[in-house]
Image (cartoon, rainbow, N blue to C red; front, side, top):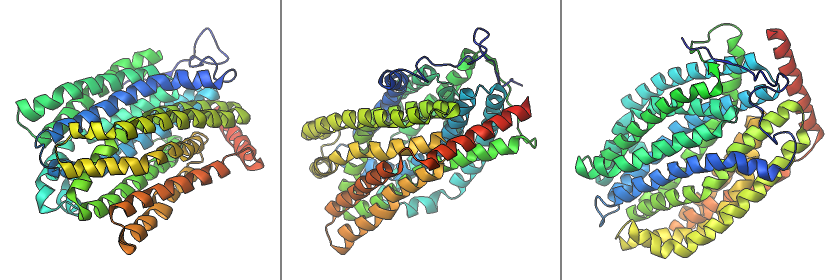
Length: 479
């Protein structure tokens, strides 16, 4: 078995091997950019291959949006799976970054082993459930007879990726918590390049059609997992994987799942929101559903800088929180928000300008292009405001108060958006415009809520004191 012990740097017994220059003092702009840039490049490559997936899918039949619509219905299921993987990643990353901030090496060792055990359990359970309940699930998602075969093909051939996605999430949590974002960037780049190369080969050369996209993704993810495994020596550690069922491990299980479960719930909430939007849109027009799928991939590309900054923020807040630097954590949130808002605003404007020229490259369907351009012109300026609530959610996860993150996400995707979509699209009979306007309403209100919640307060200082006391107790108990 591999040892999961992370060794501190012999040349720096006080701070440990994973000290990042500028983490506890100095320019936050430079630190955030330095940490987020590798994450951005890695995420950008992932987004590039999702756009490539849609591009090649759209060219199977350029006259119809049925294939894109069918595959688009499955995307929320993929979002749920990635939500669980991200939950494991965030849970491990949050705990590891705080353990590193406290210079608690043995604690980091335990977190890794427990996280890997969680992956195995989740993969077995989810893979079985996904297979046995496939057909009723597809019907619930809104797969009509016209698009069911495309949805089913993509769904079944995507099932083998369950384990590789979850394991990749755990590995990313390990490297993110240690601040080794370059490894994550290289892994993402490797997976994206392989996926982009395999897509047209699987779809057209081997004539797999929509199934080819799922197969290409599976091969790419398997290779990424092996890359993470081969990168473990970069942590200068001897890793051991073992099932952690000892009494002392249950606390770690609960802590990872507490932080991770909140992340899972947040993304599952987003997935449910997308499913609800899909159900309204597919009833209105299949071409509108195809457009919703297309624009979603491009919007994800636009939000990539925001997501990369959020990943950097988690590490910065977690490690400074572990040192008791509360003011620096709040300043990191504000700096991150300014950077993310500004970048996404510029990209959104560019998207609006290029939309009439961009979407005809994906499809020759006039209706699909019309819906895509209309959606961009109406909804795009809401994207920068997502940064305010998203980064606040990341902050709360980093300090172990993940249920605040869940509340912000519920406000955006359920408490506000869903009723607004129903009222505008159905009750007031505004159709597709009602879906667009209703979805935007939750973004603005949750941004205002997040901005009001996150500020220096006696409550925040009390949370930090309790966190430091707990970490110190755990450190002394394991000494």
